[in-house]
Image (cartoon, rainbow, N blue to C red):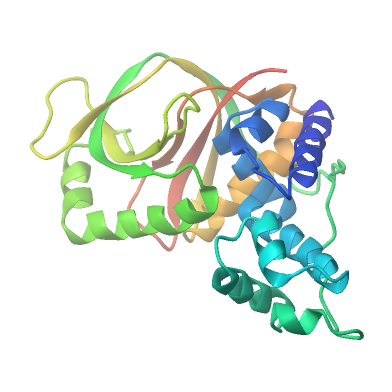
Length: 282
């Protein structure tokens, strides 16, 4: 229950700063997790990305300000838009009309209310998992630098997989796999760096094939969740249920470390996989 309360503290911080700068790092600290895990947790619990929620709340408040007689330019700047053009585009996308029209009495507008979370544990479907402590290991693979924006990364990472499949990198990585190993998708998401790194790779004790990079994964405690089914919807559903069903009553919370996806075969229509989430005792 504690993590829900902390998540709501972070949401209150966001609500109080809609007219200013919102720091995802500070929101994550309030929720007692990394920026990466805060955005991920929010999107799975709320059902939409954090950035989208902030946009909708700002544009809801912007509509109220316009109806109270404030100028379009002033409202645009107040809610974080650099120009009237970008503000008008975003406003029309949500409300279906231009900001100038919102000033007229009787104009229909859309309101997106602020949200808060409460905990309901249904227990309708069991989840198989194991807790595993793994020593540090070495990975070689192809890497992609990511902005600290989960919404953007949900678009960039699939493109990266497609690109590496097309240029033969994934097939080459699979050729290095030993029995029992799987192809890895790693997200290194430390708040100490200015960017995150996503790696498609394989565990390899020594040697670095040409064109690939080395990444060391620190020792950590993980909760490991197996799954099988069509991709990507099956793994996304497992990740959602980890946060909404398993985590609240587990006695654990997000730990520091690398988030891992382990792909155990090459059938995208019935993929066998494991989700490895770094954890620590609550």
